[in-house]
Image (cartoon, rainbow, N blue to C red):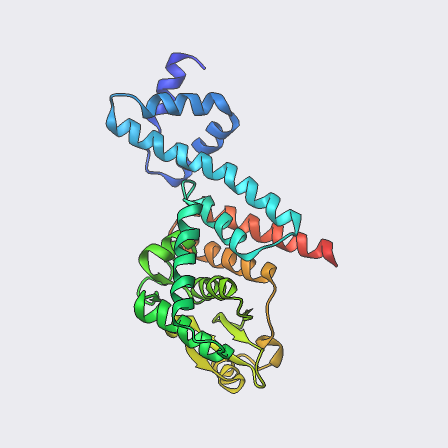
Amino acid sequence: MTAKEKVALLSLLDDPSPAVREELLKILNSMGSYGLEILNAAAKSSNRLLGWHAEAYLSELRSVDLAQELRQFIRSRNYELETGWMMISRVAYPNLEIGGICNQLDSYASRCKELIIKPACSRDQCAVINRVLFHEAGFRGSSEQYTDPDNSFINAVLQSKKGLSISLSVLYLLIAERLGLEIAPINAPGHFVVGCFEETAPFYIDPFEHGKFLTAGHMLKRIESSKIAPNLSYLAPATTHETLARICRNLVYHYTESGKGSMAALFSDMLKEFKDAYEKQL
């Protein structure tokens, strides 16, 4: 690339057009290490505005690499919920600090252990998780900005204390796992929850509503109110594959609503990867 071509390329970094940005990302990505070298030099230049835009492009290119890691994870079909959620979140936040997030999760679990008086039944242990997450820590459903993509990422949820029904449910599952408590993801239509099948009658918990306890009857009525024919299969435990795929499906919709077509397309590709991986298992 000539000096003139470099200047022309760098002049496009501040172009607000999504189409220009998407095309420029493709070009820089195809250039490999040479493209990164150009951006790194621009990021260190005395022109602060140019440096800011160059850093933004560097971040997005790192996301491309992390997206490839996520694809490999999906294709492996060796799914683990915490790892999967972290990897999905790193696509949007390449500098996500995994150690710090694990420490936060461990801290909430440790607080629960302090409050649980053994022997305690599953319902009583869930009541303690409710107290720690929703009353002491203040986690709640993000009703006001429901379509904000940040509601789906573990680091953003831990920072804002707000999330979707599925992200709060997965957070709940990760704490329960640290306590050795057997609860399961429930991929119910329209509203993700968690369920416990360890006691005589199964019960369900809605983390979006501060850990509200629900019976199977309550769940079926909810489904029916959404104009969907109630079916007990909706109340069965979901797989890790189904849970992670639903997070990606939400991100496709929310990024589309936010006008971020490239990110919507990326997570749409991830959904296809999940579908292909599932079909290979059949």
